[in-house]
Amino acid sequence: MSDTPVRPGRLSARKLPQPPSAVRGLPLASALRLSRPSDTWFKPALSVVVASAVPHLTLLALGRLDLVIYTMAGSLCALYGHGLPYARRARALAGVVLGMAAGLALSLVTASLTGSTAVLVAAGALLAAVQKVLCDATRIGPPGHVIFTFVSSAALFAPQRLGQIPGHLALTLGAGAFAWLVALAPALVRREGPERRAVARALEAAAVCAADPGPRHRGAAAAAVHAAWQCLLASGRPTPVRRSLERLVVHAEAAFVAPGPGAGATKADPERLRAWAARTRGRGPVPTPPPAPGTAEELYGIDAERAALRVREGRRAARRTLLRRLGPGSPLAPVAVRTLVGCALAGYLCAALGVGRPYWAIVTAASLYQANITLSWNRTLQRTLGNLLGVLVFAAVLPLSRISPLALVCCCLFFGFAAEALITRNYWLGSVAVTPMALLVLEFGGAHPAGELIGDRVLDTVLGAAAGFLAATLVTNRRAAGRVERALDATDRARAAAERAGTDPAVAPAERDRARRTLTASLVELREAGDTAAGEWWQRALPEQRLLAAEQAGHRTLAATAQRCGPTAHAPSIGAE
Image 1 (cartoon, rainbow, N blue to C red):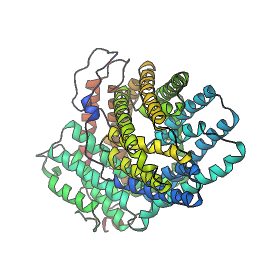
Image 2 (spheres, rainbow, N blue to C red):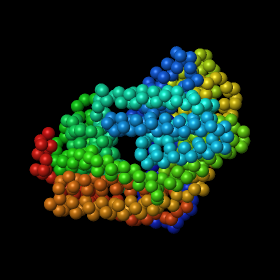
Image 3 (tube, rainbow, N blue to C red):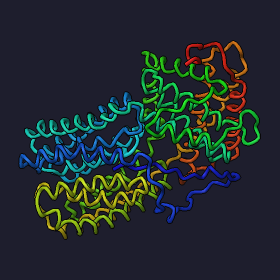
Image 4 (tube, rainbow, N blue to C red):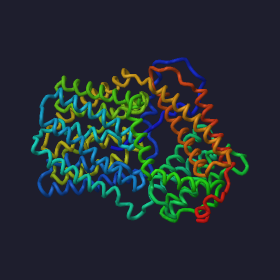
């Protein structure tokens, strides 16, 4: 189910450059430590329950629970896009539903044409690699490629005939359409909900930074402010609520770019930012802050940028960005190769040992691959522990689920909710609920010996995790350091452009503001690239001093340009709102 990306945070406390090291230490306790639950954990949890309950109960009434795997493929699409504004969410979820149906169709056709385990494992590994790359390139967010791989891999090993495929795909698309409606239904009550949450996070991160303006807090605030601007840009036409939210982001941005306590006029009040965040997150009116320096310019710039994204050239630029992530030299290529090799190795190993369901091993291996080896190691520990504990939970609830078909449906819905409720605290905790749900799905097609299910799942988990992590260590990612170099160069260019725009009075306000947001985005990308490379093996040492200098220079430029901004006459209608 959903998984929350976690950064290793190695660059938050910079060190002097070290000689090249092949192998870095791997954490143990920190990978299993529980964190605070996500502020929106209940949204995907409730969405997937509602999206699953209607198809499940309909099939129960028709006496066709054996078709649940096909409706479940569509229902699980309700897990995606909960951080997106509704206009963007509608398009993203439509793509998720079509992508889910496409992967399922390929699996069903392959399963109907061959019964060769070798071919099926190869197809499953290839699909997993493609799904991983596409989810990372589009940045669809949690739960990422794992749900796609779970559905397509399970379908590969389900008995199938060509004539059945259209009907089964129709079930998936129908359930997916219902999941689309469920995920978008909150827009009828609170259409700016995602934007309000994104801005509240930016204000909270800015408050932390204002209270303790260290490098780590500045990086977190920059990322939160950047995410808030991106959410507002994608939200559609301006409304009074969105305009107030934009003003709040201006204040959050001013707080994190300020030099720190004692900066005079630029000093931010953490308590006021936290109070604004609480009111923004709530159901009452959005707070209307006093104008911050540069508010008129900032709003003028965001309007111009929003308009530019709507025109044909803006859409073409977005497509070019996506193609660059997928094209030659993409930093995603090593992770795709790891996924392909690891899933194939796990599947063939389990098949060689006579395990009847090698797709479990494929899914286990696919779920491990994160941005770097350190994060993949964390996920290996989490997945293994969660699955083994989940098997015990399954053994305990299996007698209850066999009381009646309705009891089986209720158990699956309960574990679907529990998985989303727990997984944001730590992936292993969510896996404790995901595992019994995945095992109970097999019961819809008929009862299976409990000992066989438990034994196969334990063996698949151990072999899949071992094979998957082995592939991660053997397939090197030397492009991580190259990505850092490109991010450094991009940050230097963005900083120079922001400085020129900030000092040249002839530059249009929209261009000046766009240059500042481009610099913020480049700093976010720089930190992400540095954190990714910090957790990789088999590569040269990182330019730690240059990374630190680039971040410091970028934040100084943002602070200087923010201090030079002031109310202007460029957009009187905006400033008067």
